[in-house]
Image (tube, rainbow, N blue to C red; front, side):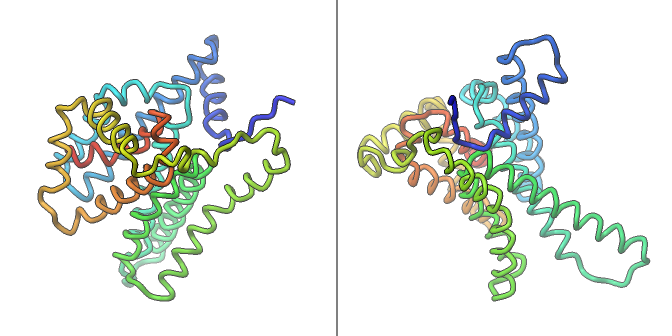
Length: 285
């Protein structure tokens, strides 16, 4: 019947919207342009996140590196969900952080109009955080790995308590519900779902020599950083370790978990590493 069910087709919907705006071109044009727009949005979110936690200079460098790395120039104009995944996952982190800021504002006595503005801002950030988180998970469930740095931001602000953890779990569970619904629905059409379990540890490659060679030597060292960028990246990880940077270390740990859990998929598909680019350029910056 021509059924093909993998990710929720949010990227495809966006491509149709772009095609309706820029009429008279073919599907390749609208597909690539969708990825380009998403990548421009990723640059903006990356700049805003890094500016808050590291400073303006590091934010400019992060955005610049993200924009000019040859690997990323190629993979930000492909007809694949990855550029859209990076855009939605960065928006997920940014608006979740803004939501935490809004919810933790001191409750001082203010005029009614100011209180209304505060409540509106709170609900706006909550809505946007939910929208981007749900979208990121639907585009590709890999985005769930970034729940780790998000949980760090939450616990850093509200501490570890029963109420705090319950609120966090409820938020994350709500964000997962549309993805659970999507998986439940497509399971009614198993003939349209390709095999995917091999993405985890097909051929038993995890932690073998080939795993380290392909992911770290060839992809990270050669393809992404072109050898010359590798010392800068390593120095960035170990320089100036202070509290504001722990958020990015947890982000890095989440990405390491991603390439380890889905090791066969990452070894086979070089475009999977597009999801790793934001934290790579942050440490380089």
